[in-house]
Amino acid sequence: MTYSSINTPNPISNNPLTTANEQLPQRLFNRREIIPQRNDVLWRIERGTIRTLTWSEDGTFITLGYWGPGDLVGYPLSTVKPYQIECLTSVEVSIIPPHLWHEDLNALLCHIQQAEELLSIVHRKPISLRLWQFLVWLSQKFGREVEQGKLIDLNITHQEIAEVLNTTRVTVTRLLQQFEEEGKMLRYKRRIVLCFLNQGAKK
Image 1 (cartoon, rainbow, N blue to C red):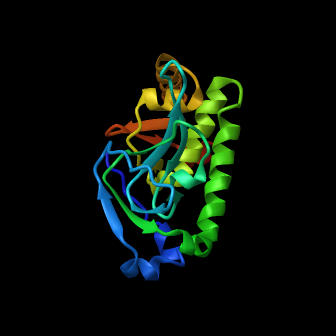
Image 2 (image 1 turned 90 degrees about the vertical axis):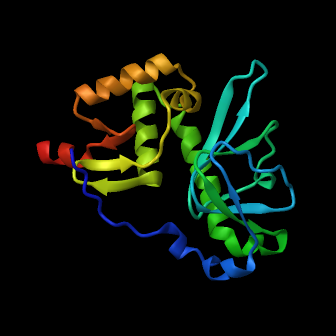
Image 3 (image 1 turned 45 degrees about the horizontal axis):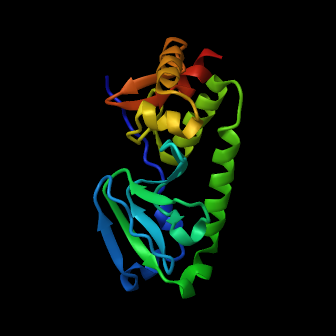
């Protein structure tokens, strides 16, 4: 099965601080590496994918957000304890000192908006609607157009999805299979394709 992609704008290109990257210190992190806990800087993602998370007393992970190029993350943005910033891929970040935070106001506002949007999704009912809207949210943030619809260019496991949506891995697996049978999605090399274009053609 061939998937032809359509070029989409790089979100970093709209970042007002991109031209100042040469003056900002940068760091590289490996997949599954934890970004150091520092309260004196924010990290702007230049490449890769990050998730922020906490966990309950019994050790259950609670995902707080997924973040990609152009997004700001950092320990000063949260009062949740414990709080962890995990790299889901290899990641390149720029280190933003406090005296430059005001110059990235749009990214800070975007961080708040995305966190609230995800919070609203995880409280939707029934769980099938919750899962579908989460997939749509991922497709808007990490998706790229292909012939069959929109490819979510993120390697996320069923367990990780379950942690976001406060459900079980078994339920996520069952509902994803249901979406496939209904023609709402396809699978491609451990990725999910939402069949928006196919649905539009059927209508």
